[in-house]
Length: 410
Length: 200
Image (tube, rainbow over all chains, first blue to last red; front, side, top):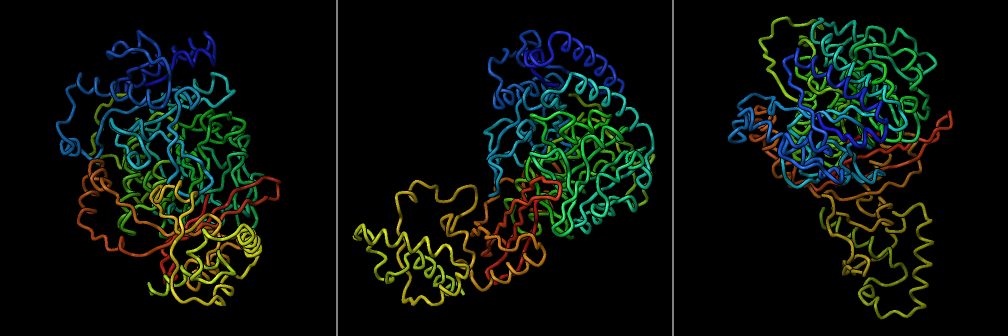
């Protein structure tokens, strides 16, 4: 776990920081029950960072933080003697690659995102991304950070939120992880999908391919006025294929030229109660800087107990109808990987690789939209959480899949 | 077909310097201030015209002009971010000037699927297929099976001449919110739509 002690202290004061440290302690205990070792590194705190032979960072920039993370990971690998001799060794250890995950505590104003050049020619000046934190040492650029192989998650705190948002996320990670990995889930009963009517065909393709059949709602005719507690009650897999905006707190549906409001943060805080996994394809679905839970739906989900939110930091793309591509493909691959029992962070890493594979096999190359999609999706939450494997199609959990989930570190 | 395209590319360049003979284009540096002012006025009026294709067809050409590199062009990176811009930004908003007939069909298709894009002038770029060096290796590191599958595949698609058009519009919703809507279409020179995506 990586964070900045000084910035957390600036934001929440000494009492707030003490509450965070206390929560971190109990969070570490919960992780150790799952055979995961939590190693905490406050990169601007001398005693904390000295255990890795590093000096505290004076200036916290994305590049300096990446440098520190790379050295910490190298140090941890050396201690465990797990450093692979070659990339082939790494691949041979299994499709999961690196077994060290990075969890960033704090949003972009605590540990900054990388601002990578936008591969697509659209109105985004840059792409906010955590990909470089998951890449090996080397020059950081859009081209070189398309496919990180180290799982990265982040517990964002937005701007103007109380310390409770971070505490809730650590609690959700502790309780949710235990619950999700112990209780058999039924895709039929525990899934909820909500899509703009214009994306109906593409969403149905994703929805059916991950083994769900009902509960995919369309906006329009539905809108946020129709949201009820039943939508989110006992739902663990939430899928949203809607429009989003960087200036509006709402997500929108679409049918022709009609763009009704599909969901708002207040709907989520009113009805969202659950240990859920949320995947949103909305543009700016995972934008959190200068937002709080009242103005960001993803933060609202995290504040109400969701263990994980996957979303885009900028304008995302997708096809109207199958074959699915870009954001739809990330969502589909991610859900599939999670249902196989993969940890959330690793599921996203593999989903990116699967998107790249499909794009290259269809087109022969990665185009600008594909590249942007690979960079823009971030994971909010603990990347080591996983669910019991679910067999594809039947919607039932597979009790014995023969998959081994070895201990990992953060 | 490529010859046809070259001619049409020539039409485009000639179109900018409307009122001058194609053979005169290479002598722009000798123009007087009056001529330049006249050209500026002509260009401004030309930008207002909706039917660029018609105007292009009326222009009589004999051979392709030499491309003139202005100081502004020299400052620009020639191939930035994996995409080779075939035109200046202003010209890029004139789709008919790149592959006129083929793109007209593409544009009609877009408007029929996305009525909100009616009247939007797309920007069109010729896509330079990137090298993707190392991507397959990287995929192989994350998932060995996927990497092996890709390594066996042929990449004949890389040799195609393709274009990408982007339609952008800010849309005001009934609730007063403003949404940025983008539709991106990849098509080949015959006008076949290879990929169509829209912003979420």
